[in-house]
Length: 639
Image (tube, rainbow, N blue to C red; front, side, top):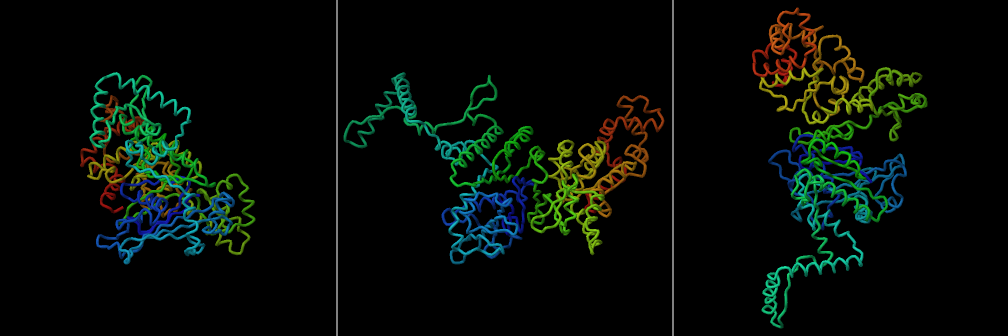
């Protein structure tokens, strides 16, 4: 069983969240935004046994809108886990039979479970008191008898494995730790091997003790303690250098590693933090596999809650770790701050968590969008087309048309054409247009492939930003960052990512992603013929002209960046920069030739120009007004 929906109310920084979860869900965002709170909500619900190990909640878990709020009188903490069968008959029949009393049958024939845990202040007990409730189809609590019967069984089918961000290899590999200790306790040694091992240990111990008479003398002296303490005999003591039992030997088991064949073997604690952290993750996996193998109930699926799996790892290791985590068989819920880890995560698995006005919010790309258009026989024929079949399907719950990606205007017209014979054909045409607009944020398979190939360099970083500025290339990237610095508003300090979209994908995909993740964006492009193509790419996704107002900015009509700089009066400055870089004809060539040289040496001239702009406010003020006005507006909060 896997959690398909998580609802949280009045928990820490969370006033109200309704999250859809997939097989893998990765929470990203700034520090202290609420990512850990989301994982802790799941952890508290699935690992606590109320009445045996405390309530799981404290007064600090109650959402306080301001510092004056009294947790005892504020609204109750409420956490709901919704668990739905992925398809009819997918769940193990024995599991369904065992939990039948707390299951609900959905309209489409799938089974589901809803568990609600609330925590309120009890005046009688003077403590925060939790309550368990399994809910019926109407969201009302099932009778107490049915809930109590299956509580223990429910936990058996949903084991949760949690790994925190602050993991210490010394603690994790201690004999009494949850994972390492459990693995050691599961080791079984054949009786014959145990007897042989103990015989060899005893012989080796005797030889070690006999090697130096001082050890025997020490033992004789300590042996006197038995006579003094007990007083009934001489007693005896001996020095023991090796384990006396197999269990004792296993308790001393540790991990030794070496980096290369010629390097020495060293205990794990003598290696770097990155290797230690990675070893803990592999230990975590080994312990989970053993525990699942020991599970007796058929149908058991693990849920993993892992905070910052990439902690202490270098970029390549962080990227590789994604494959390791994905190999875990079960539902994965993770947090991360690593752009290198995020580079590997499918876009629809990301949940961007933000803190706004003291409350945790989130944004994401849904798996699909559902329209108000009913599925008809005409749609059966329409979706036999290769392209349409990749986009459209029938929603099992509503019976309406659903889409898994954006589609262009031609596909919108073809969809509307399926309803041309109906009485409300015009209304259906308008609904198809509204549906296309809603789908503009859904990436296609081609978008994912393009961003994986072209956009990997920026893909991780940009989802941690508060705002995007989209530009054509590296020259604009350098100039905008220089303007931010000289104007006292460094872009990195204010969470602004500059994306050179031509080198990292296309003009259409980033406005769609920004809209889906609620990241404000602006795009500045040259005034040449390419601007029309860039605008068309955005509109083709389903955006409207009004969506581009104030966001899509162009240089003077007909000008690229070099022409705009010349028009701003920087001809001599550009000639000087080129001449100093080795282009000796720069001082005497015609303006047309100069433009050609600038175009061929874009990065060279702009790296010098941007460095000067960053140090000279007067020069910055004479840069193209489109760039200056945008940075000024962002700094002053007017755009």
